[in-house]
Image 1: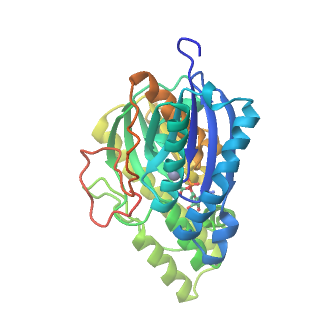
Image 2: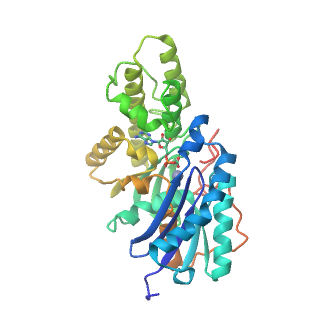
Amino acid sequence: MGSDRHIVLGIESSCDETAVALVASDRTILAQRIASQEKEHAPYGGVVPEIAARAHAERLAPMLEAVMGDAGMELADVDAIAATAGPGLIGGVMVGLVSAKALAMAADKPLMAINHLEGHALSPRLADANLEFPYMLLLVSGGHCQILSVEGVGEYRRLATTIDDALGEAFDKTAKILGLGYPGGPAVEKLAREGDPEAVPLPRPMKGSAEPHFSFAGLKSAVLRAVESGEYTRADIAASFQQAAVDCLIDRLEKALRETGQMPALVVAGGVAANMTIRAALEELAEQHTMRFVAPPLALCTDNAAMIAWAGCERLPLDQSDPLDFKALPRWPLDPEAEAVRGAGVKA
Ligand code: KG4
Ligand code: ZN
């Protein structure tokens, strides 16, 4: 290896994507493969943990072989093996972590047990070499809804999280209520384009609250009542739901910014970052606060292994490797100082 260029193999298996990537510290993604389990889970309207774990176990070894082949590399060429070690669905996490341990042991390479949320938090720096610390990160996915002040590698201050559902989960549940498929986010966004965002009076949970957190459970219940009332079109409900979600995000980010003071950049990550209405609102907010707005390419926003390998690349020079008996963690807050919030979901 060159004196400061290093290569990390990354594995992600915490939810319903099996993913493997080889990333170099100069921000080159040398190879990556990702297999979605959407088809397996679609009949159940959500991710079934047992099915997910089995699918990861079947796919991971051939994918590892394929990625090494794509890059024309062998394990000996790699400087460290990184895998998501939590938080997430524990069966799947264990499949990825145990595989990484076996590879690390066989090839005598350091193991890096990566917090999935750290993967998301640092991924914008893989896409954008100019993104310096600190930055404000809105992490919005099916499992997470957090605002983080990303202050350095391993230095994360959680400013807000959800006290019940994640935003992607609220999109998915709304889709279910409206009779759209899974995953629901893209379907809700599409239908919302035909609707009036002001048509249905829906709540903005936590808006203006002295607490910094999010809540989306009440919004989902209000969507259900709106459907049952028979007074509104599905498109109007979808559009009004999306607008309510945007208003909540902006209100909570404004509060976080009052807390931190000026930040150089606002960054969004997670699957919900695909939503164009949300992106536009965030971009406008960033402009009002004279912050740069950074939205990494979607393939880096949704769950992937390049972000896990990249977190390994960021940590390797800091000598942060982990022991081979590192335990998979179903819950693993990124900011250990952050207060537990009532009812926070398993993945928060
Ligand atoms: O990051 P991700 O792929 O996986 C998790 O870690 O959860 O995020 C998936 C979530 C799902 O809840 C999906 O409905 C939501 O992201 N999503 C969207 C959109 N595309 C995906 N939500 C709103 N609008 C979208 N266009
Ligand atoms: Zn994720």
